Image (cartoon, rainbow, N blue to C red; front, side, top):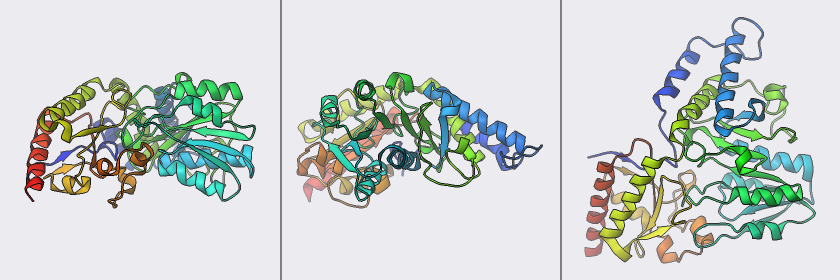
Length: 377
């Protein structure tokens, strides 16, 4: 049985550059990076080199990068930190209905503390209207947080356009860029964001590490409290091993930005499915403004998890892999007002740098077999 991995939006393997960069940290650079002696100085240098690599990918200053344990912590740090610094009870946050739980759940938590949160709708392609952001802003608004690209359908949001609105009103703008960093250009000045979250394992780096870009001059209350690590913004001895892995992954991502070859393969995949199944297969997400590697499709009237389970050796997803295990319709597809009989048949295929055309052809053949067999039952 072949083993084909098409779940790169869930997690990615480590690329060789990352493994090689991390290897010395397992043996040699064991000192505490806060120690000013022969054992700590090399660890500190490795940490700061990694910080520079992350900053280079985002085109920002190195001192604007804070290492975190992942995208979830970066999102929580942003939302709760802005609340503590600028809002407190009575503040107002604007987000969308299709955000990752790492954004939605902190917002719901703050609602219990007296913060008002507006959850903006999206259209049938999963796209938020910047004018809806403009209309939702009040005198109490302290933060707008809109993901750069959706993890399930891949739709890319008009962050630069939204930033022109928030800048004009003096409101902080955060974007969860876990899915877009390493796939698309994410230069913070071009996006116009004040805060941006990164997750290492989405861009061929290790799990358990991420970063938060905090624009120079923006003050955030720390999520944790302790000593003065990360310039006082994230206490706790830095995980140099994972930070170095993230830095190497960011450097290795530079030649892949845009993922033109992967997008051609994704489009080939959709063309084959359209030819093979016609109206029996539906595309979910924006037809053009979506991640170059993401193909979310539905077989109306079918049960997506059942179809996926019957695909021999194929690793894919029926929603966000961070919270699967249910055959209920995806909240993202619900927000897009996808009909229930279409949403229940959704499968997300997310391609990677190593995906081949032979693998795509095999998956199409397997889908043809599975749907034929299901149709005879």
